[in-house]
Image (tube, rainbow, N blue to C red; front, side, top):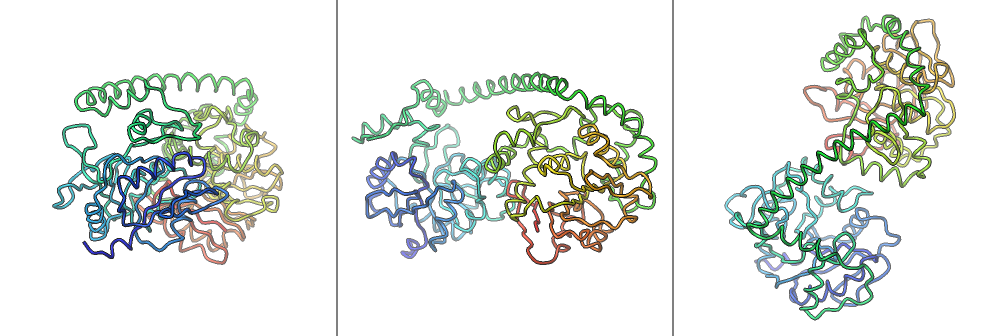
Length: 578
């Protein structure tokens, strides 16, 4: 094995001062079972350090969270490969240097992104002719796992997203990893028994469970003659430990696996029923609090047919891409016959304008909670009765859609340091049913000239939705060529009247609508200089058969102060801010 491999890799132990009580047992066992470790060892901490010359502390204070701490630590050194550890991975058996170096050599030769040293989860399929190494599928739920592994440092860094926890990294990072072509590998485990009996590094997985000591690791410490001094974290219950232990046993573990999967299905069914009941209760609560919206809807509904007729997109239909022509046809046919109060539950509206129960919304909400007070978030996000949206979050009585829309704004303001008070006019291209405009209106606190440009049927929906919430006097529907844009109101501008107006805004917004438009409309927006808007908030996806012009956006946006960033939890999607 080439000696110089030792100089290409380093061990990084992810930790922080709050887990410093684990450092003593960790390093005692580490050097007991890996005394001839050939790699430099770095401990990520805040202000404390471990008193051993073999361990170099990387002090990061104040603590900036797992992802930022990890990135800053990796950028301090030039090692192209790393072995990732956490402070509660307590070694149980001797580590074979020859095997570790051989695995490192394989990772380099195969240009792999990572090679998991503990098969949890194990590989999904064989990899070439290797007997004890397999490959993890691109769509594996835990393609990215933070168990001990050798990583290509640059690939690991590319997967890091500021604000994410390690748990976020495993879930969202697995999604992001789908665009990485390098293979993700793992040592194998037994094919027939539910045991991780072929790890390259054998350790407790994990030694600290939900903030408490693993019951089993405490017994292990006693046998090893290790005392835990000054720790106040407590120990998990014996009952909980036994349940986890039994799930890992052969045969019985398989039986328990079936049992727990069946139990999970029962729990899920109960949870879904509870969700439906709770959702109905919350809708009833909104009914009593915001019943005025039903009255407003009934009044505005009478104008729907006339508004739609006056705003017919004559001369523009040939410039609407086929995907949206189909959507328009379905919505227009149904809403002309009967526009129901629960129109937000229409299949096309749900498919095209709602994100559903996506797990990454939790990360968006965490980001929002770091930017606003709980009271402010409640004021911004509380859902409305109009349309009967599905409620996904009980704390703020809101939908995932509203969280998603506020996240766009929070991200934009954070990245650009823009002063919302100086934005007095907004032009939104494609406003869905009006939810983003509603969130912005609440966030702004003060009136501004807000213009939504959209296809006629959606313009009519926006008028009803926003008029039901804010009142008809706050919404100006452009249903003739003689009407003007009103200051201090939300102006609904069907695309059929677009060329009549010389629009000028402080901020141009389009989250995916401009990328789902035809090249004709995209070019028009560019010719208008994004309607002379100095500020931009754009989100767009990769081009596809459905949306062939999507990626043109990154080529069309030019000028200074452009900020482009990947949307980490949505592979193939990007923001552009200015």
